[in-house]
Length: 88
Image (cartoon, rainbow, N blue to C red; front, side, top):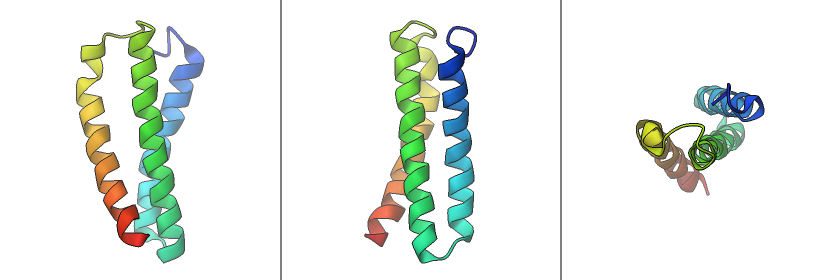
């Protein structure tokens, strides 16, 4: 993806790091910050999913190449959403 669209590749990389780093920070934060970190991680996971969809739509990659990543991001998103929902 990054060779076809460097901006999209860099944005995806930042979003992937954001998921991991905010999830880790949320695990070690107090309640108010924990909620915010998990919410940010959830948003970033959706950002990565949409970037993969865009990359497939623009034919930078084949759609089937995103299936495993899409599945894992969906699982991560569901876990984060359940944490966020318990808080609200």
